[in-house]
Length: 310
Image 1 (spheres, rainbow, N blue to C red):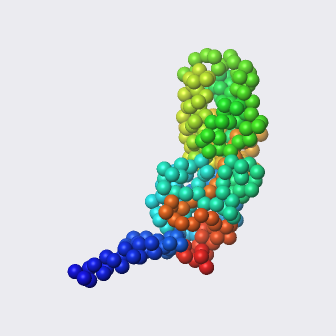
Image 2: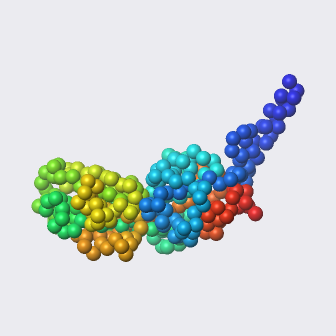
Image 3: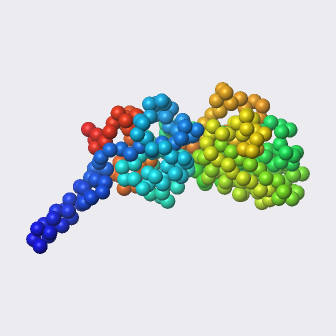
């Protein structure tokens, strides 16, 4: 009995330094090997993070690949030794993760818009070519929706509420923009479905915008097929534009590449800015990582959490 009591007392006394079984956690933070999580190769979030941290093509082969930002947050939230990256619009609390500062700067509306937070990327859109929609009504609805989302006070407020960073000083009241589309907005559009494709990172801002705009525009329907930024261009202007995966608007969480010429689109542009943030389990004590530290972790040059303290 005395021996059992001694063991129990020792475990209680050391709880702030190490757990009795499972992942080891110290008062300085988590210890042991990093569990690195990354997005798939089609992800604009991955491209923005790798370019921003400067390790394109050098990702450790031990990285665990996940399918979306939500999947990333869920996996890291369930792994005390986990580290990954995701969009600033992610629900961190729901998934049990926290966003880290980058080079001492916290990602926020102010730091993203003024450029002081270094890991940021644009949310871009591109449409089908003018005259290449199923009907003139759908073409006008698409134009109206994008005008609402990127230029109106009401639309920009929705984007901002759902994690996109916008400069609201440039916003115009929707009542000033709507007359251009009046003939279509005032009719029953419940038989029209707008289909979107591309980046998964835009889902939160996009869905909220579509849900708000549909009742203002004849109750059109919408289908979101978000699977990655690399699918945006092919499904509206490229090889898949006339196939089963065709879409009306494609979204990318990065700028469109030279091999994705958008000059043939009816409309293309940027509707907000997003930050990419490194994330860890909410119980990890670390608050900030530098570019050098992140590069070491994601390339595998730095192996363990405790190595960051050296």
